Length: 148
Image (cartoon, rainbow, N blue to C red; front, top):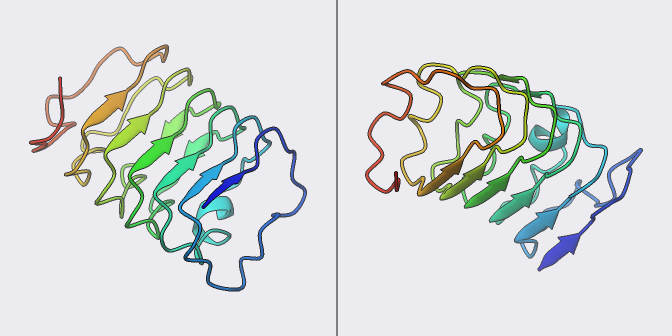
């Protein structure tokens, strides 16, 4: 089930997150006003079968450590066109099944040394139109699936 919540500016979250909602597989929050860390850790914790999370064109500035730790089934994460400046070293912890990660059009200047090491299933990573000038040789770790 897809929950299309594009273009909404939420003052409170529109889904009842106090109950388990395993039927939701995709959430689309394109062009919203999402900016807080609790958006993912707390609010979405009762959506255990989430496979696609689209947060494109929101107000995210930081990807905090363990921000997505409750999303073991997530396969696609879209973070394009936010205002992400900082990604903490463990920002993508818990995303063991993530296949596709989009970070395009963010003012990111650097990435932590081993930021992607835990993403063993990653197949596609895009970082177009960022301000990243240098990538450490160990940034990817062992990623047998990644197409370069």
